[in-house]
Length: 319
Ligand code: ES4
Ligand code: ZN
Image (cartoon, rainbow, N blue to C red; front, side, top):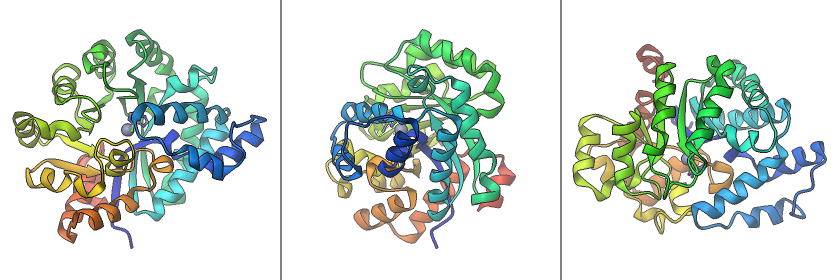
């Protein structure tokens, strides 16, 4: 039995498996520029964030209706249940859809159809986190928050993703202030490809409660000390780091040193259809490659519930 865990860093669009991409393309009368799923799998041989993102955004063309988003989320939740996931905080990228003429309501309501049935069908409680694309303008992020207004009862928080370098957190100060004023929880990707200073900025300028990735904090001992002291959760994605070449091989992932340093680490799958594994696959991979013992795997699982946007009683119950 896989260890019970919460998944806190998961882009729902990154769970689009080639088989579902082709099925949705057929249903929506869309021609994909790949002969079959085999050929599409071969396109998954990127080795940096931008090349991955280009494919990730282009494949989203197959997602058009509420039913498409529902099917995507339900397929993820079914797989997550097999991987021991009991609670999932799921990112989505509204701007990647509204830019293609898909209203934000279609995305949120479609995903919510699957999320609303998740406890009963899959035994997984869920939350939805809306991410802004940091390589788009700050005004576009503000417009997206406004467009999301009728759906905010379905959204627990906001995040920041996409191409990191050159798009520091401070660019989004206004939209984070506006989201905080609406009672939304705050997270941001930082220190994936970007420098440790982006992590500090996400904490100081945006006021985030968790850092997504945060891998590069290890380059700044004073920052590590702060993250340890304040128990700031880091949602690490080791398979993503290898596939996007943040590190060369999994055996060199700093997760053991990060745990030794006392950092509040969690392990997550990021974009599992693209990065070669769902979250329990990731637990297995780090156990094998890094020699983590059962005690450390339990710590990672416990951290995932502690770092979740669950109240204390729900987190204790899940454990
Ligand atoms: C992402 Cl791995 C990663 N980094 C930044 N943005 C993303 N969106 C989807 N996956
Ligand atoms: Zn991510």
